[in-house]
Image 1 (cartoon, rainbow, N blue to C red):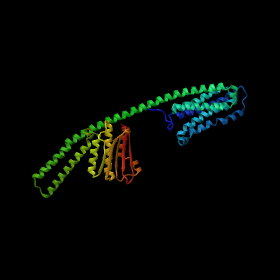
Image 2: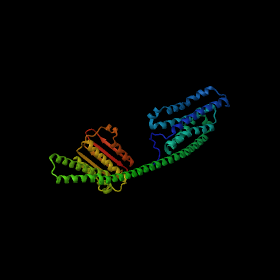
Image 3: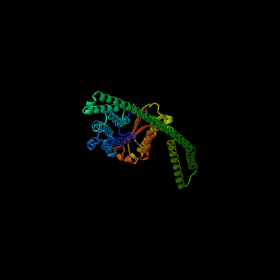
Image 4: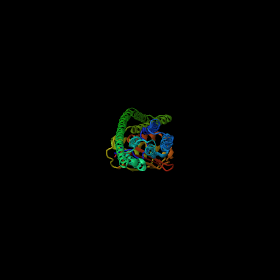
Length: 414
């Protein structure tokens, strides 16, 4: 698995821009120290024309301050924002060493050292944000630019070609070494972050599994209690009313009341049994995900008078309990939404497993809803999305007025 920072990623590493601001402060301090030192302690007379001549070559400092202070530029440039800052921060010191430092008769060795210190921060920031190969490109580009500018200055002729080339080569190698260290440390940090995120995800899934198991046990307990109390009571009441109706010839008005009571008891018993069936989380445990979804779809279809088209595999293979529970509950919620809101006549339900994951798709030909209707975030939709997120999956909904709705759940469980 690759943990490298992608070049096209917009998000900057935490603290990177703060270090960039400190770098600008360092640049300003270096300029002030240089001017003050040669004004008071320089070996040659300091003239103000030297200061004014140096100003055009220090224009990169206010430009960088502008970039770092104006957030609009970051939003506008996006992925080009940091590379632009790095290019400006790299070109500035190189130009300054070749055209500004000679104005103050700064020793070439000292100039090379100062340039390396100034370029060290862009190198570190490049390694901080991007993979090591960009550090290599950065170092090569800086060396080529430095050699190109230096070769056209009197310093190059005075020093000869060997010393500057050797110095540039040494600085490049040292830059690569520093960049590699930073890149390696950041890479290790990203691996640790990834491992921590994976551990947190597994912990969330484990907690969700425990929660669903506890909920399932509680639902089954409630179902048993209701079956042994309310269902038995309603069943006994219906039997007693039937017996009374068989042995007693009541007046017409009492007969009507008796039949009405018997009808209410039978309807209550049927609804209680249906509630018990829905309350129990046994379909998955008894028949598995495929048959449980098939029975669920056929039951809801029979109740609503739909035309059902099923596309289910014979075998899905081993799935974790939380994945099965998620797919079953999403199918249940989606079918109930169709039953209550869609006014549909035809339903298509498919479940498949391929290289990318497990895919559940439920489509209807109902009234649909506008694209912005999902902004209402009903509890049903939120619940389905939350279930999908718990198993690392995605829930997609596509709908248009009068064209029906498609609910698609996919998770990479293969």
